[in-house]
Image 1 (cartoon, chains in turn brown, green):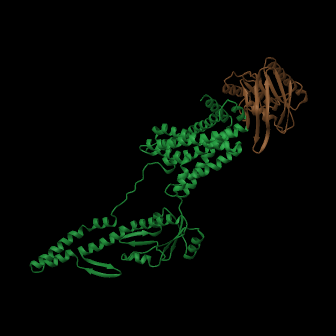
Image 2 (cartoon, rainbow over the protein chains, first blue to last red):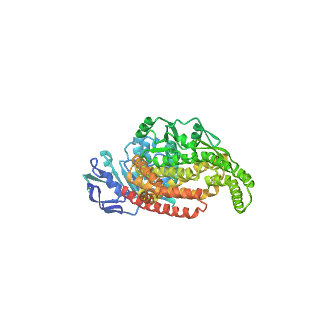
Image 3 (cartoon, chains in turn orange, yellow):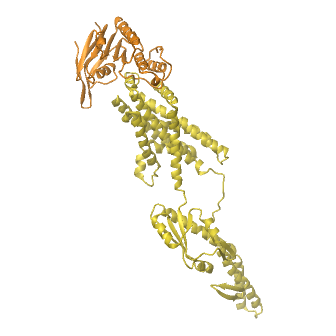
Length: 189
Length: 441
């Protein structure tokens, strides 16, 4: 199967502390990878490096595809409404903005769940083939959670690839492969 | 450019939706500018000077036919200091404690010397060693100069009395002694009664020339007493508070605070909201982010600066102040506002990147702006080192640009020089800030 995204020997250090040991990861078409592990193990660091939001201390990330990213903590402008956030990031990315049914008020005034929905909507901007999601279902109600999995399944079925971080055993079962990270060391079958 | 424009548009929208922040950002620098103005005006405050009258000055003194009311004369000439009447011991005590900055003593015999008009009476001045002593000495010198001007008419009049006595003859007084003088006119009459001869003709010629010369003494004596006279007239010129220099200071101070704080907080806020990482994914480079913050600061500086200029202009025009506001210079001023805003904005972006969160960035910006401003206020003649350091910050250049724009007859050379400095500093700070943002990410 085609590799859509590959991490080649990436590692990361925060000062003296090693957050991620050198590791390899290939994300192929029609694949979902779940990353699991204890708190502070390096899961979010790896996902941020894969997304290009964090420079690796060593190694590199290769991808020819549009990559969508939803960080664990929603990364959006609190003073802008959901529509304005979507429009701004779409224009910066040169893609078409998507519509939203979220309330038309500043994002800072939304509920935690609504902010997470906006965070995910930003990840889906431009219909990327690769999705990197850090605990995507956190704060979502069951209906929205099912909607999200339906979109993820549709993307995978269409030849896309998804890598997500989760602490939920039920969600782990949705993945084709499960990676375990502990003390910055990735184990991926 | 498109990315910078999009980020700038977003920042302006965020700013518009933060009315409290906007209000504080607008009001704070204006309050600071006002307070600095008040502190600066202390330099013009009247220092307290003790007047120790050991000679019991009379309420009136008559000299050469002129009567002086002592209290009124002192009040009129002591416009630059607040004179406080104290006895000698109390004045000495207050001088030591610093409650007064100088002691002006009228020693015994002052009035007698004054009335004699034959010997200069003396005033004694003691000052503290503080920074104001030089100024007070100058002001007391000015006071004595003005007293002398008040007295000079009386002295000239008294001397002219003696001249008239020499011409007309009669009874006069000098140093308490009364005496009779023949006078040149009566001398001429007596000469007519003498037998003619060449020696008498020579004496008669001398009397004639002396009479003619002494007749011209009036103007000459007045001119000698006052070789150059300064005629002071009140005009309709700008008051200090409206002067071009005050406008320049208000603009430079306001923009320094506004642009530095705004850019520092705006850049740090990108990180606070977690958006910096998202932008780094190819949406906006570190340089574009810094340029957007510098542009935001420049836009805010132009808007607020124009507001200040319009407010000053309206007051000047409504007050009918002579000269008016130099409206034709406003476009040049706008260029200066934008350049100064961008320079401070890029420095603010650097502070925002180094401080990492918006609250720390705001605090660091406030801590940084005060020394930058005060460094820029130190005259080069007073502390050359401070001036050289200040050259590497935008405040002094902005101040000189604004002063040239509002005041100089030919402002372009000075404005171009300061504009070059501001552009250079903007590029330098942008480059360092870009590197700091990359490390921040």
